[in-house]
Image (cartoon, rainbow, N blue to C red; front, side):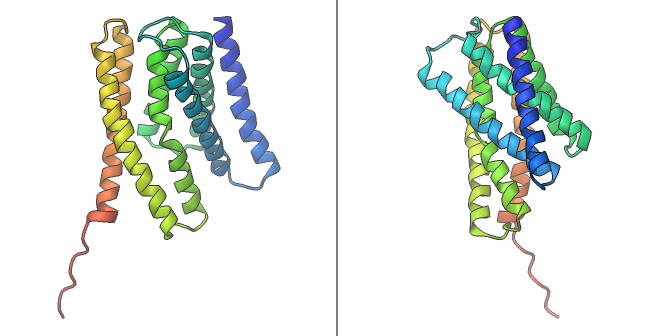
Length: 224
């Protein structure tokens, strides 16, 4: 566990210092800096997940974690430790997001403590984080008064589409492959199921927003 604890300590410190330095040397609000950290983590996590999926030697579900897999999982665990503490301190997030973070922390910690199933964890990280850069760009566009621009609309629709096709559709086949595989234990399968249920909850919110903004017709004005 020395390697795992070292990586988690380093990455937690790194993401925390990233935030603190940005706050110290800029005049932006805390949420602006936090979302910059979130954007950076998502980019790094996606690159690491792509490496494991397409370049590294394939690892079977439930197999022993490699050193690179340990670093990848620790990197995201360090970020989530920082982010959930930030959320508790500023109290900006709702219960669904807090539950998402708690499940994420539990899943990533379990992978490191058990020393296996990083393959499933990294597949999940890639599926979750691929939509995050667009989500943060959307927030920055809104925060800088660009909500009514064509760029904001494109980013928003791309985010919604990617969320549905990757996190819901791809996520369904991913969780199915984990559930039917004999090696992952019951707790790992339960965590995977929890992630997918949370994803479906977010998708419901997104679909409701999409319907209200893009599909709902304006009621005709009554003739006077």
